[in-house]
Image 1 (cartoon, one colour):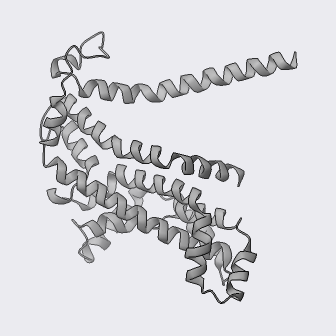
Image 2: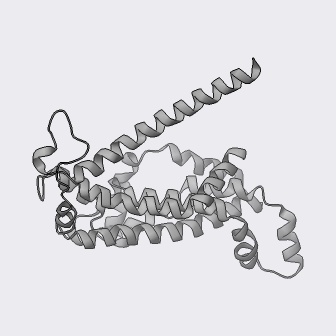
Length: 276
């Protein structure tokens, strides 16, 4: 009876997972399907999943709309720089909170975590006014600076670094190593899995970020892909849903590629997070 109950539980779990995976894949499959359709096929009923004639030209047309190549480069550059600087600063801050005792450490950390409850809609006006004063509107710096150090990133790094034995750092200090050498040569190599997980989260957030560019970017040469896709869907450049879906498909590819490249470390990092 116990074995039968276990098998029934496993079968139910598999069914739930399959249903959940299918539910998440349907919008993605529909996006790809629509990107290959002619305009006349988009709203046909019943809907068609496989177009009669695959319109590969939609991707070429999407590239030619509103300087797509430049906008793709903007998103890629901002996401890469944000991720690199974010990993560096978040890991250094997490190391400080985890391994150093200083006055007000716990209070500062709690206040830092409290900022996670503040939505961007509340801070976007102060950010706009601050960036206007520092002349950071319509600039890469304005797109990168607000996201390179986050409460979530610092919290994630701190939780992992608390599990690193302090004796490692103490032994390195006895051997004459400075704090920077300890951090880069001892701590960071141990943190590959959580760094990969945080890197994927940071890249994905920066790549998909819509509200920050919407607030501070008006110059076409600094626009990012979320702004372009929003403009396409509103009919600013063209009124064609296949082109919108083609642009959205292209915008999704870097995230998928990044996940498959770093999935082993990402899954390991998330598993360790659960243990923590």
